[in-house]
Length: 154
Image (cartoon, rainbow, N blue to C red; front, top):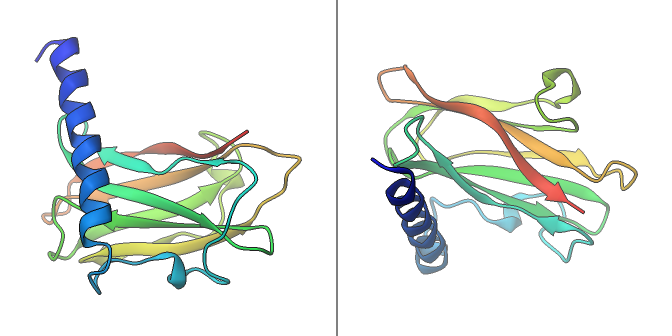
């Protein structure tokens, strides 16, 4: 698959995930902002949710959704997409520094059918970037995706 076609596939998948979040977010198996302490509210920085692709970059495995509360806490959940309804390993942690797991908080990890999280961290405005360390495995236990994703940008 050429670079242009891969980009078009990713854009189409992002649009699909975005529309599915809006269309079925009332489903009980989807976590929502109400799962986060304090619920969701306005946030003084840009929150970057988005898809988690497989290693080839052509399949959305999951997507993460960031929320914030009025007490300066950042909350993130990882929603299953590809294997939704089938138990498979998912892990999400909030980190202060890209690529440095020593700056990460506790993970919510395990074999989940619908979502991992929420994970919560205090948001220190002196540090304007936060990221999530995400791992998604196939139902057979092999790693499908593992990496860092930006959550907050100023």
